[in-house]
Amino acid sequence: MIISSAEFMKGIIGSDPILGDARRQVAFVGRSNVGKSSVINSLVMRKDLVKSSSMPGKTREINFFLINKKFYFVDLPGYGFARMGAKGAEKIRKLILWYLGSGEARVRLVMLIVDACVKPMDYDKEMADILRAENIPFVVVANKIDRLNQTERSQSLKAIEAALGAQAFPYSARIHKGREELLEAVTQAIK
Image (cartoon, rainbow, N blue to C red):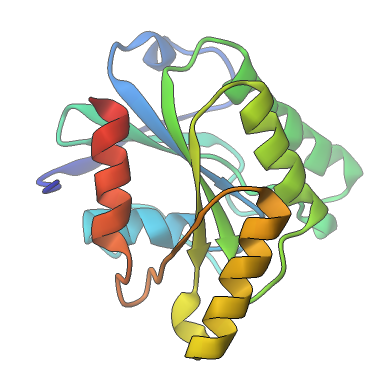
């Protein structure tokens, strides 16, 4: 797949007409600071489409990006950010669960992003279970793989796959490693 155009459309925090758009959606979800925004920027080969921040918990809306004028990349807020406070974290959790489970969205695929340098946490396991329960196809993306040597990569991927019960795609948003494989997964999902 060649991505020839990508543009921010809008951020939402509840029901919105964009959810009724016939275009299919590929959603990106994961803990705060795993690089969801960086993965999207890497896939579209732009540094500034999705605003990323070193401060966890920056994204508080569901952001829609129109890709090739044919489908959406949907950037969900990061879950599990402790410093947000219990109320804020629960609000984000409910927003994500609403998007995934309300039936309003046309989600064809979810990219569950995890940090390859950190073992999957209970939040990641819960998200994989939710996606299975909602019958939403998903792939696990082990981002930041470039920070590990070959032995560490192998161990990390095995641990991620065992914890989440799904194949993990090794990925590096920084050097675009694994980009073609992820774009192929997107191509299959939006057909």
